[in-house]
Length: 373
Ligand SMILES: [Zn+2]
Image 1 (cartoon, rainbow, N blue to C red):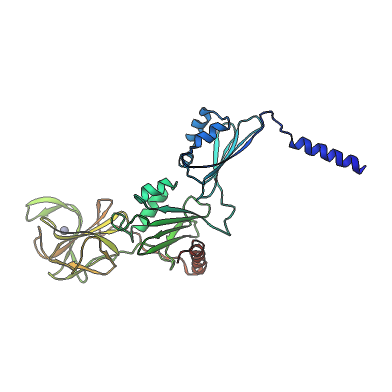
Image 2 (cartoon, rainbow, N blue to C red; image 1 turned 180 degrees about the vertical axis):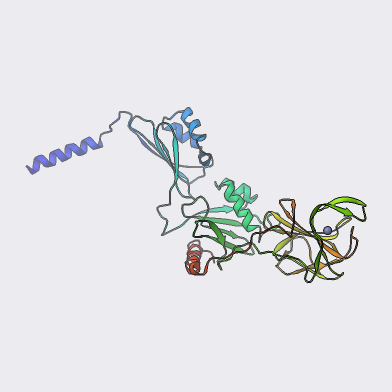
C-alpha cells in the first residue's frame, strides 16, 4: 500500500518535472552587462519585433527599458504557447516594474520592493555633467527631475554651485515620486522628506518639518507707501508717452534700506540705463524679483551670493530713468511680470504638530539607512 503510494508520487513528480511544451523554456532571466540592450534579451526569447514595437509604444514607462544599466535585471515569462505573459524589470537602484501582457494590451505595475520596510531602495545620481543629464542616465523621470530642480533651487544655484562628484540620492517606497530627495555636496547636505496630508497630497520638508521655499514679505522696504502700482498703461513723464508699468513703486527717501523679501540667490547686480542700480534675486526655480533705481548696493553684494529673508541688499535711490527717489520692485515668474499687490505666492508650510514625531522618525531612518549624517 505504502509502496504503491510512493511509486505514484514518484510518477507524479516525474510528470511535473517533464516540460509540458516541446520548446522547453518559458522563464528567462537576464542580468545587464555593459553594452547590453533590452531588445537583445527580448529577441533571445523568440518574441517578435512587432511585439517589441507594440510594447514600446504602449506606455511612456516602457521607455525605461531603453535606459538599462549594468546590474539591472530582467525576467521575461512566456505562456505555454510561447506568447508573452510578463516582463519583470528590476533596476539596480529602483523598485521593480512589472509589465503584463494579456495577448492584446500591456499593463504596468511598479512593485514595492520586497525589501521595503527593512531596507529602502534608492537611486544615486552622481553629477558628471548636469542634474538633467546624469539623472536621465540612471532612469529618473523628467517630472521627478523637474521637481528636484524646483525644490533644491531654493538652496542651490544649479548654474554655479553644482560640482562634479556631487550626489543626489532619491529614496523610494513604491510611489512614482521619491520618499526623500537628498543633495550631498562638498560643503553641504540638503535632505527633503515627503509627507502626505490627510488628502493624500505629497509635499517635501526638511528634517525640521518645514518646506524648503520661503514666505514672501509683502514689501522689500519698511514704512513706505505704493506710489505707482502695476498697470498695462501708465503716463511716463520723462518719455512723455504711455508705457506699461510692470512693477510696483514704493515711495521712500533716498538711503532707505531695501531688504530681501524672501531667501534667494543674487543673480545679477548691475547699473543699467533704465533701471539704474539694479539687483535681481532668484527664489526657487521660477521666481525672480527685481529692485531698481537703488542709490547703492549693500556692501559686498555680488552675483552668486545667497541672501536670507530680511537681509539688507541695497538702498532706495533715483538712479537710471527715475523721477524721484523710490524703489521699483518687480516679481517675475518664468519671465512673466506679475502684480506684486495681487499675486498669491506659495507660503512656507510645515508638517502638522501631531504628525511631526512620525515624520522625524522616518527622516532619521532614511538618513541612517543611507548612512548620511
Ligand atoms: Zn516702477
